[in-house]
Image: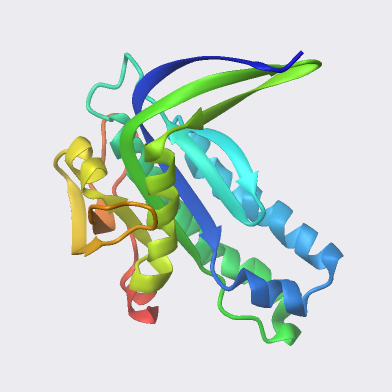
Amino acid sequence: DAGNLTGKIVTATVLFADIRNFTTYSERLTSDEIAGLLNAYLQTACAPIMSNKGIVMKFLGDGIMALFEPHPDERGETHARRAIRAGLAMQLAALEFRKWIVERHSAHGLPEFAIGVGMHTGEVLMCHVVTPGGGELTVIGDSVNIASRLEGQTKELGWHVLASRDTVDAAGAGVELGSHKEVQLRGRAKATEAVQILGIAGGEGTDAPVRIPQEMRDAL
């Protein structure tokens, strides 16, 4: 039996994150050390996604793909705002994770630990792919490709957290923006507006403001 696909189309926010200079880490550490680093980092990086009601869809080597879908009880904290909040918190977690690296691998001359986070808001097809012996939830669509390619632009632009204009518009007021630039993403005829995200105001309930510290910005 070839697997079958059941799913629904939703407007959601897709987030990608990966480790900068990971090739250098792979060259200078043993396979066991890399496995230990990735296990520790992925636990650290996934916590902000889950605490902001996101779903970790898959791990891609040193990368993470997450989905933030609409919830009926959002009350102002929309999927785009939750994704931005998660992306900023992931950067703060990465800053903290540098201590873990230094404690264990200071002798290897590794580059300072850093990640890039990119996100886009648009229509996606949420699928449950059913195959003999199991099934898997996945998301497909142009919005996924845009989010992935925007994450790749964080390296080019030197921005920690990058979002499309669609995500910024969907997030509403209270998002602190930096620079913006029209970027040409691979496979797309039209340019996409990329926006640097620096912080977000506090939300309803216990959501505190989240902001990238000045020393992180200066480092880039």
